[in-house]
Length: 245
Image 1 (tube, rainbow, N blue to C red):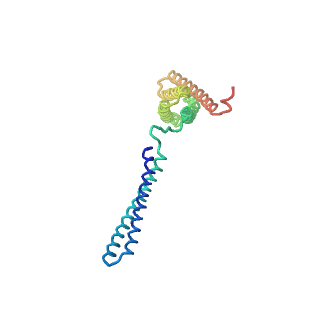
Image 2 (image 1 turned 90 degrees about the vertical axis):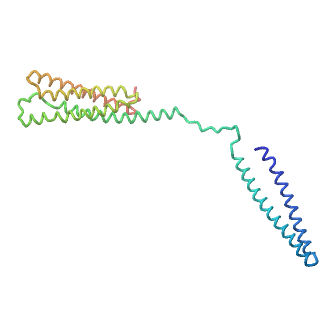
Image 3 (image 1 turned 180 degrees about the vertical axis):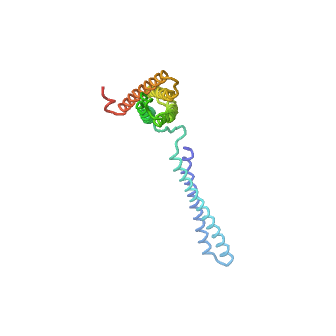
């Protein structure tokens, strides 16, 4: 590139001198044609003058186009990265970016597990509110209504289990412990629902008492665990509480 730029001024200077000489010859040819005497000399002189004029115009146009091309090439070469120079992209704070992405992932997972805990807590409260102590005093319609709740409880518990299984597979590390606690609570809810259903299939009073106690124990334990998890999640999302010693 440096060698090319070195020859450009010399090349332009030489062509300019040649064009100047051609126009001088053309001018002399027209002067000679004007001063010529006789039809033959006048015709021949003007013919030669016109040929010189055409040649001068042609080479002048060619020189102008070439000069513009050289100017464009020089401008492009001036803005082109020199050989051996490597353009480096601006530095990126990868640590800060990774931290922001992790914080966003933890926040999204916390919101999702908070919703699941809220749904599980409501189910545990409904289970704990069921009274199986005076079943023998209920009418047939009341007994059937109480027994029919088992299907709804089982369906809700199954949906909670599916949601939790999907969530646990993508849960960030800071929420793993919370996920395990919720998993235990949902498992207790599932066992409570199973004992609720089995209560109505008991063959004697002893089985009824045993399944009723298991149902109440599991539902109460799950409810206590879910309330504690909910409290911890609310505390961790509150900056003032999280900063307190």
